[in-house]
Image 1 (spheres, rainbow, N blue to C red):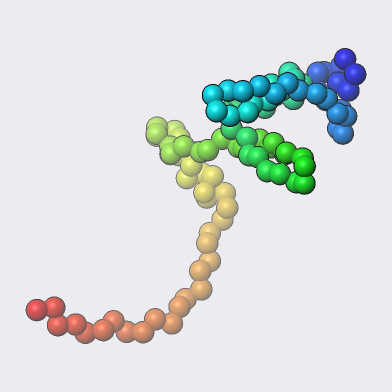
Image 2 (image 1 turned 120 degrees about the horizontal axis):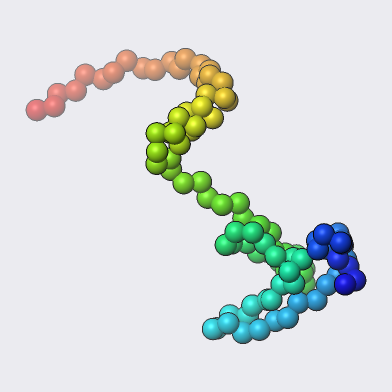
Length: 98
C-alpha cells in the first residue's frame, strides 16, 4: 500500500485517505489501520482548515493495593526532598470565641 511502511505504520507526511460517516448527530472518521490510536480518547484542535487528532495519555487512578501505595511513595521519594524556605508569619491573633 503506498504511504505505509512494512511494519504497517504510515510514513511521516505521507497523505492517506479516510472515510467520513454519520454516527448519531456527529460526523465520524474511519481511520485506516496504520493510523489507529491506542486508548479511548484523542484531543482535537483545528489549525486553519486542518483538523489535528492527538493521543491523550490515560488518566492515573488512585493506588488501591498496598503494593500500589508503596510504588506511589517510592516514585514520590524519587523526586527528592522538597526544600521549602521558611516564611515570615505574623503571630496568631488572640480571638475571643464567646
